[in-house]
Length: 104
Image (tube, rainbow, N blue to C red):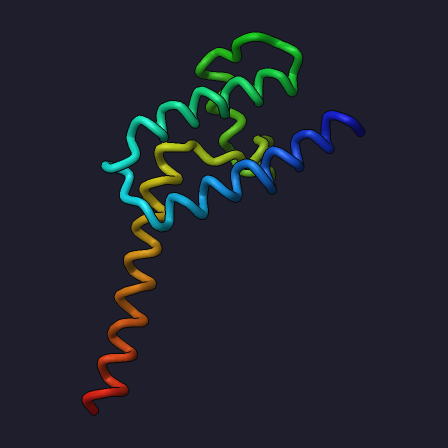
């Protein structure tokens, strides 16, 4: 349906690009961007349901995994922190492997 198509486009395109960006930039550096993106994020979700504002409690239900009845949408600030931490851990692992290859 039309709403499902908009939701998939939002989740797989808009959010994917933002999450990729968060893997490369520390959340402390882009806090203004995160706040603005969170506002846009909430407006897009509200537009999917043809309303102007979604109350905080209902919006937090959308963050639940699909298996638990939510929409599986990540919270922007938490996603920024977890994606950046994941990239640092991945970089550390790769750097450690390279170090061992060169000096062992």
